[in-house]
Image (tube, rainbow, N blue to C red; front, side, top):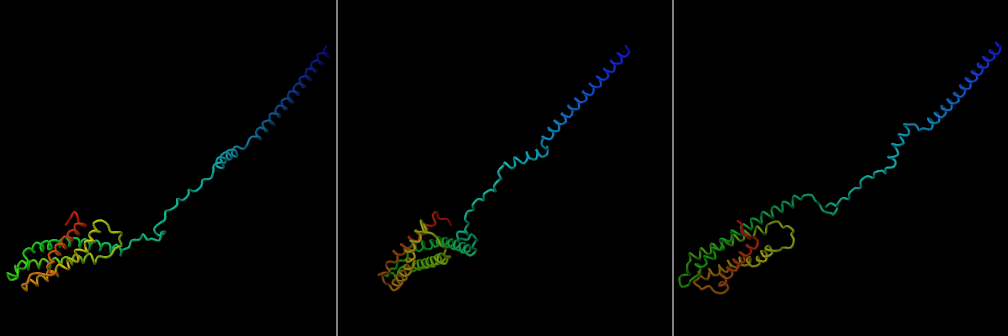
Length: 241
């Protein structure tokens, strides 16, 4: 009976030891498999900083490089066309002098109208009368004085237009064109009128009746005054003093 109990105890001890050994072996195998799987998983994952760097570089590589803005073509300058845009002091001085002298010419022309009109009015008292010692000598002297003043003023007025610096200009039109055309009428008239007047004055002093070409003195004088007035109106209307 004692032997049987001892054998039973030894059998249980051996069975328990065998079971414990198997359990440890199974646990060790499972642990080693989990470590391998874990190592495989960790090894297969990419390095975090490297993956982040690649993700940051991919958009920049996919974007096209920006081209520099195209330069806008510049327009040709005056120097490219062979012209100069620099101020010309000499030309500006000539323009200023030209303008100033023409303004004086215009003002003197308006002033000259006064002695011209007075000379025409005084001509009514100037006709010589051979039957009365040559007529009214006082009225004639006044007429001669006013006529002489008109000639002097006319010459002074014309001198400012003649002496003004010449400036290149385009085709003349309008009132200025009429003004220049009328010069061919009143300029010769201002020369002929005093000559014919002097001839008429000499004939009257000699007790003669005015005759010949001297008798055209009045007609030439009125034609001169009319053309001169029209020339002024052509460039000065409305007239401003």
